[in-house]
Length: 488
Image (cartoon, rainbow, N blue to C red; front, side):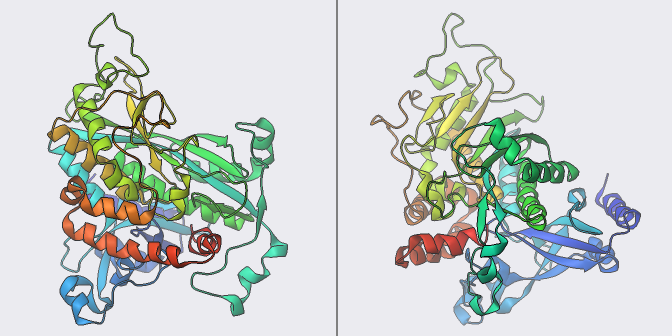
């Protein structure tokens, strides 16, 4: 189906469902969905022509403040296409159209950002992933990703929400809502906790399925009010689009029912457990459709893979080079996987979160967990660096840039670790704060080559104020509450 036919199909759906409003949505650099809501008549025209959006939405930090001084000459020189709050155009992607199950007579469509002349906006994160996938395709490869996402769901506490709604107490960023638990936690996969959380989890289930998302499971995680949602593998761009839609959709659907979903890594409460976003990834041969990471047969048929063995016992040579690239450029890509000051609180020894830059055979303490064996078509690498608030396009693009560097340079990974929190890490430790991670990003040759100097410099300028405000905050929990819990 060509684009014109797809647009006609969307128009027919708008009419068939008697929709009144269509949301034209776009994902910003922080992974937050912005949108314009158009009447059905206006949306019909915008399907062809797009809709204008102020370009300053590219230039805002994590709490929505514009970082660049858009009316001063240096910004016009540095970012000429963004000076003076000029417009960019949101061009809808017909295949992403959805009828929202929680909002009356409302449709939703994801958009790419382009300049008025039709050129893609290089700072658009979805464009960055498409560029990375294009680099993979030049080598005859595609990327497949499965999503394993942890989050916290709370019940909105009406008695404690007067401050949240009081206009005299409004601030930038605003106050967070009062909440209570949906389950007490510290009882992993507990059926009784699952039953306590049945109502909000049913909302998650029905919302995801109504939107056509490939939901596999809903699980009770270890922490109080913490749950995990797992999605089946798809191509990387679809997986990233699904993550954008999922976060936005479940937050809205749960909110209307009196619940509060947060994808903040570590909510600002005592005795809480941090949430991760574990990205399962494999490469596919575009010509054959086969898993390019799978080793057809073990290198020595009589050998049995060991916990501290070579990567080629489990992965193809190409897969091992890709793994080595992820390890070599782990520090540089960390901020694309964990982009908030809050997320770095998760990187602690013996916490089922990464600490050292190591890989392991089915080892959940390692940064990279290799799953599968010779002949297993589901062979893959699970990267455990991510937090659930990460921008999915940047998270996935960073994997590609690092992995391709490993493939192109034929890098060889070290042996697997059996002690991921021990002293034997040969490639160093994961950055322990946002500032250190930004330093690593700007110094990493694979990240600069992949994303481009312009994007890396832009991203650093957007994220530095966040780290500086955090370091200056006397009350770090209060900073996280307002900067993240009230927003993500």
